[in-house]
Image (cartoon, rainbow over all chains, first blue to last red):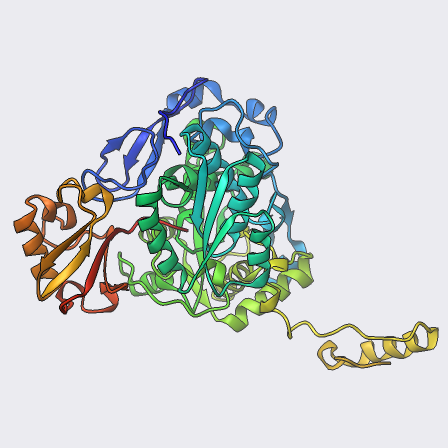
Length: 433
Length: 91
């Protein structure tokens, strides 16, 4: 690979990389930590005066039907970003789920149908690989719990970049196959995600590859802001009262917050206090534990949960997610694996959305917060569903019953129909009628 | 105790571009003293003004995060491998 200096072919608002801890600034290169001072995380800074002058609701609406309609707020310079139709996923008014829970206005931001690989990761990867190409990388890589590997491999294939991804060796079959099909090199590491991540931090030092969530992380993570922008635009250019999102590294959560703040800052929406609540699985809940105990630091944990996509025991942005939840008067809660499965089923049965374990976690936490009186029924609440249930079928296998097997005869059908009305579905199993 | 220490790229300017060094120390704290002696300036990058390990640096002893062991007091044995890794990655 060669790393050329960034080329700017059009006027952009991006200014520099800046350390979130000490404020040290760096050039817009492939670098994720404050290497000269404190090792804090770097974040892209923008010229908001420039954005105020150049961006309006109309210029955004005239853009493509993808995340690239918000290109001026994203850390890329090229005229032709990698656009595989990512973003602008449905904001579903969830009336049946709302009634079930006792809420008045509930929306589902449905990234279970994001393109091309059915999770929110397509947003961050589209941005990261566009930036990787600008920086001259020919090989891209990532440390992944599954969804990111799917997305990196797919979008790298589309962009003609070489790809090598690292995953824990115990991932769900759908996530492994959904990576292999794009023909990247796949390293299944015997260890948990935190160990994969650490290995990749060391590999990133030596191979000269663009790791989307390591040395390209400041660019990559900005892609999640589009989940804030889209909700604001889809609500008619206004912000909700409360959002609930899953917490893994904590990055998504903080970037939705940043997205809302930027829209306020540039004058695209009216200023408004939005409460941010986060969801974790009890078997991997380092941020929820810190929230509950009033700590401002995270004690890492060793994950043990079916919610593998959010099983990060040592979350890089955990402290920032804590800050956001606290300063917005939100909450961070955790739920058991059983509650997660119930959450998946509840969303499917009430809204027709089949989500994976992370989404089950988020729905279960939504329910818990409502029951505890921590979400006001009057609040306009948006729940972020970030991944698709077809990828984690193992999680609900055995919980959904079996179809009736019937003879191709009217009589057989009628007998089966009668049974379906009298028996619970889990009791139908394997019944030949 | 003689241990092997893996140095991340941003700190290799202190270690004369060596990615791996041999060093002595009975604990992580003692190891930091020895590192500072051999490579002046490196401690200020690893520890904050109060002398605590910076929160965005992770230390691993034989692949185990020292926060699961005894933190800076974690005891080192001859032949142990200590990795110093920037914490901000992933997700």
